Length: 193
Image (tube, rainbow, N blue to C red):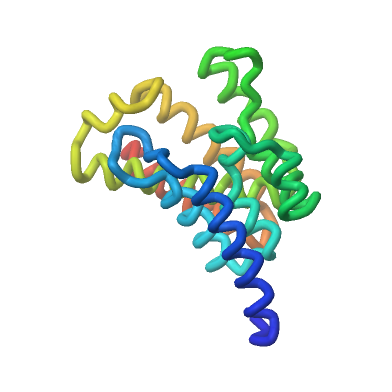
C-alpha cells in the first residue's frame, strides 16, 4: 500500500466504522453478548488483509446496515457513494414479504452464481466471519450452538455447503481464490466433512 494514501483511506474507513457502529448500536450477535459491530469489523478486516479496494472494505463494514437497521441504501449512497451502495445492495437479503428461510437462502445462492466480483468478495467475507463465529461457539458451547439459529445444523450445513461450492466455482482464475478456499475449509471443519 502506498503510504501517502493511508490517511485518506483511514479517514473514510473510520467514518464507515462509526456509521456502522451507530447503526448497529444495541444489537448483539445471535445468542451471545457480543456486540454486533464485531461482525462487520471482522468481514472488513478479512478484506483489508486480502488487499481489497477501499469501497469493497467499506461495503463490508456496512453490509448488514440496510437489512438490519433503520438506514436505507439511499443513506449509504449519500454518505459513501454509489459503488458502496451497489455492493451493499447485492449483499442485502431481500425480505420477499417474509418468505420462508429456505426461499430466501435459495435466492441468495442463485444470486451469488452470477453476482459481480465486489459483491462476491463482501458476501464471502461475511459468510467466512459467520462460520468462524459458529466454530468458536461450537468449541465453547457445543451442539447447543445450533439452537440460536432459525434453522438447525442440517439446514445450516446445506446452506454453507452450497455457498462454499459457489465460491469455489467462482474462484477459478481469481486472484482472490484464497478467500473462497478459506470459506470452504472452515465449512468443512465445522461440519466435519
